Length: 366
Ligand SMILES: [Zn+2]
Image 1 (cartoon, rainbow, N blue to C red):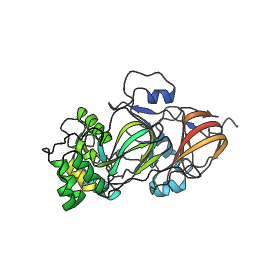
Image 2 (cartoon, helix red, strand yellow; image 1 turned 90 degrees about the vertical axis):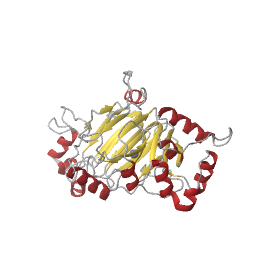
Image 3 (cartoon, rainbow, N blue to C red; image 1 turned 120 degrees about the vertical axis):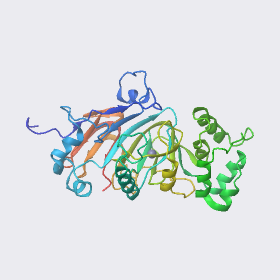
Image 4 (cartoon, rainbow, N blue to C red; image 1 turned 30 degrees about the horizontal axis):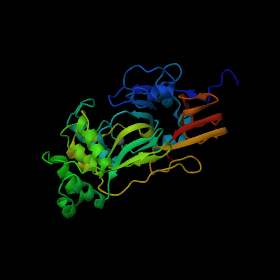
C-alpha cells in the first residue's frame, strides 16, 4: 500500500454508558478488558453527539464524516439523510430490566420537538421528551439468551392473565385495549393477586421481580399485558414506532435511527410521561415476529435508516455496498478485526476480511 493512501478500515474508539441497569461483565468480556466494578450498560458505535465514536487521531466520527461526506458516507446516503450517519449501533448489556417504553414516528417526533422548543424546555432537562426531531425505530439482536417484553399479548391471552391475577377484564372486553391500558396506567388503585402455584408461573415471577424493584409502579401491570419472549442468540426483534416494549435481561446488538427519543410509562427512576406515551402507542395485539437473518445475513425491516446483518465469516468475505458501514466482531476474529474491535468502512471502499468470526454489520437501509 502506498504510504499516502488513507486506510480502508477506520478503527473506532467507542464510549460506554454506565447506566445502573447494566451488566458489570458482558461488555468488558466482549472487549477483552478487565471489569471496573461498575455497571457497563451500552457501548455506542456511531456519531451521536451525546457519545460519539472517535477515529484515529481522536476526532469525533461525525465531524470526520462531514469533512468528506461524498466519499465517506456516499452519495446515496447524503442525498437521503444529509451529511450524517443515519444510524446508531450499540451493544446493550442488561443485568436488570429497562423502562417500559415506546418511540415516536417521524411526524410525532417533529411535532413533539417543535412543541417543546416552543415551550422553552431545555434540551438537557430531565423532563424533556423529544431531544431531537427524528424517529427511533430499532432492532435488537440477541448475543446471549435475551429476555424482552414486546407488543401487547392477544386479547384472549390478556383476559386469561388478568383473571389469574384477580383484575377484572370487563373494561378490556367492552371498550378494548386502548381504554383498558389507559386505565391501567392511570389508576394506581388496581391490585394484583398472586395466581395459584403451577399456573402462570412465568408471569408471577415477572410481577415479583418488577414489583421488588418498583413497588406500586403502574408499569408492573402494564408489563403483564405484553408478550414475554426469550430470544436465542442470532434472533432479533424489530420495534417500529409506537410499539410498547421493555428489555429485561441479556446482551444484544441494537441498531436504531440516530435519535434519543424515548417515551416512558414506568419501571424507571427517569422521567415518565404517560399521556405522551399514550399519544404515540399502537394498540395492535398478538405475538411479535421473531426475525432471523436471510441468506445474505440481513435482518429485513422497513427502516430506511438502517440495516443490520450478522455474518458468519468462515474463510473470506468481501464487504462492499456503496454505503457507509460499521463492522463489529463479537466472536472469533478476522484479519484487521479481532474480537471486540469495530471499524468504519467508507462508502467508496471494498474490504475483504479473512478468518473465523461472527461479525455484525450496520449500514443504512437504502
Ligand atoms: Zn426502545
